[in-house]
Length: 243
Image 1 (cartoon, rainbow, N blue to C red):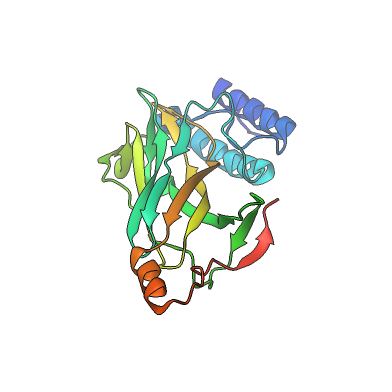
Image 2 (spheres, rainbow, N blue to C red):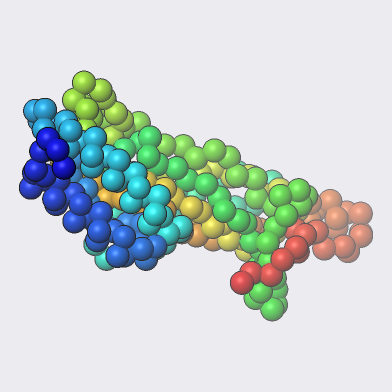
């Protein structure tokens, strides 16, 4: 229309990606990679960057499908460790994002948060949620990320961003209260965006879980025996059964 320039091949490919993402709908938020550095070269490239950036924003908004497990075409993987601790003591679990060779992650696109804490009822084996204000529970601290490498941002060579080009081990400290004996499960939500050279996958959110086995505090048991109370160590409040 008018003096509008014909679309370049890059623009056509970008629009095709837009259509593919719409066709996929909300089935995945860890799918096609989007090429961005090539959009930065020359005037047409800059116009293309703006066009594709706007399209990417719309695609992300329309196709954000919530939480999903890592898809087959997502080369990054997330796992977590378990832990055992005595009541009244501190320990930690590790959440690890596996980064393939020649791939990287951006620190400012990463986050780890505890979605829920559960306790296993015995002998039924049923998992029940632990209320945030329960006296007997695991007190989680802020996740600790290792230092990354400060490198030029491929999307903006004039800026730098903290990146990881190897497996990232994120430590989550916790403290078990004196009365928190039993087996606990912590569900983590792990957010990240993985890239390879000039390609970046859509932001991903994975769910992983860690088991924490808490043995009764020795002091509490001794104190109870000396008093001759015979009362068991209190357990965390049971508020809701696991789905």
